[in-house]
Length: 129
Image 1 (tube, rainbow, N blue to C red):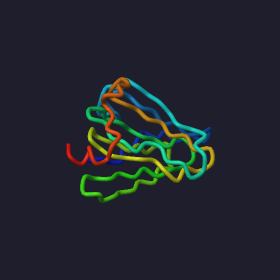
Image 2 (cartoon, helix red, strand yellow):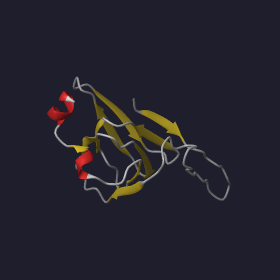
Image 3 (tube, rainbow, N blue to C red):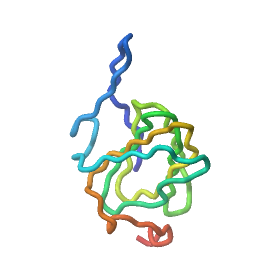
């Protein structure tokens, strides 16, 4: 089940700092990192699940919503807008991102190298798995 993760936040009058370490804040070995940015207003990213990959999504700048859709068609929404909060997604989690603010930046930390065969891009197929 997906869950929000509190990341370390070191407060300093000169500016705050947050960090990530394998096996501490991240419950898997990091194999890939990517980010999305300059998403035009009204656009949706994602719309798929992974067979094996685990993922953590962090809003480094701005905000956006992560919508999780279960196999019954029920949705859960997470509004990400703090760089010290990560949303953990286990394998077989259908999701999409929407409602991007201006200058938003989403960071995706992944447990697997990119493999097109790990993607499930058809929701009906996902429901049957």
